Amino acid sequence: MKIGILTSGGDCPGLNAVIRGAVLKGIAVHGQEFVGFKDGWRGVVEGDIIDIPRTLVRGIAKQGGTILGTSRTNPFENGGGPAVIKGHMDRLGVDAIIAIGGEGTLAAAKRLTDAGLKIVGVPKTIDNDLDATDYTFGFDTAVEIATEAIDRLRTTGESHHRCMIAEVMGRHVGWIALHSGMASGAHAILIPEQRVSIDQIAAWVKLAHDRGRAPLVVVAEGFALDTMGEAHSERGLDTFGRPRLGGIAERLAPELEAITGIETRATVLGHIQRGGVPTAFDRVLATRLGMAAIDSVVEGRWGTMVSLNGTDIVHVGFEAALGRLKTVPQDRYDEARVLFG
Image 1 (tube, rainbow, N blue to C red):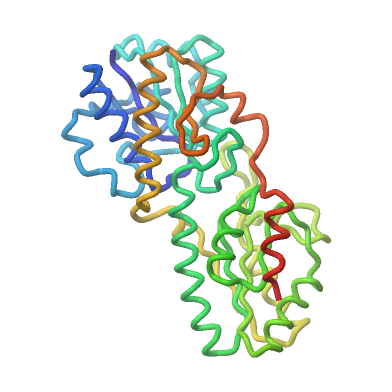
Image 2 (cartoon, one colour):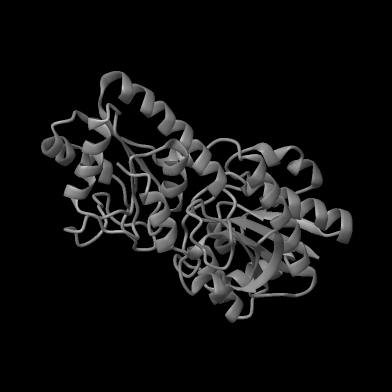
């Protein structure tokens, strides 16, 4: 078989480890050939590929990003669609596709599978918000990066007796904020699942300050105050029509300073959370998922994705990943909230 691999959507640490795991197992065990579609669905729509011999994946597990490139292309627009993609696959001799991506990528993969294409998926999102898998690769690395950055913010905050607000990624869910906030000892963690008033946040900040601490607030980009109708967005829409989030920390900082009288600074970590080398956990998970995706192809499990269930890799339908987001449950937030203030 000749298998095409693509990485689509936002980049994250571990993508190269997936590619490596799939290619090494496919060649060593099944004698398969591999090509890579360049820049995600764009390469699929345009039939733009590169060969992936074993030598190309040598040593890439430790590299961040993706050697194939990525984009947020919608495969049903800009001259795409099932017929066009099937035509490219036939012309190139590609028998099946392994699509590595998040909710948008898997939703597109499901539609194409429903139209008769042979596709299996590998879930990818640093937000850890796909319900059908316990963890997604990239999340552990993002938390590690955020925690280190927040630790650095804390030292400058303590030196100047300031309140520091760190904004991390998390469009709909607060897993990165929750984990990095708990790891760094934040005095308040603000996540999309929990609406909180500015007065409550100010009270947590004051409690920490009154004990002689430099208050530390960690906020997810998708957080909204109880007085806001939706998450803060001033950057327009992305290619899938979703608001580009970011900047809630900079909005909160002057309000908290006005209420508390404490000098407050905001830092938006942004894309720094996506970059750099993956942690050991993410390298292992991504490698196992890539190898399991080959099993899916060999067994003809079209329309499914590989997933982590406990410590086992299992196969689930795309619909399981797309049914609902894996949000932070109330008990996890209540657990962290004991530490606030």
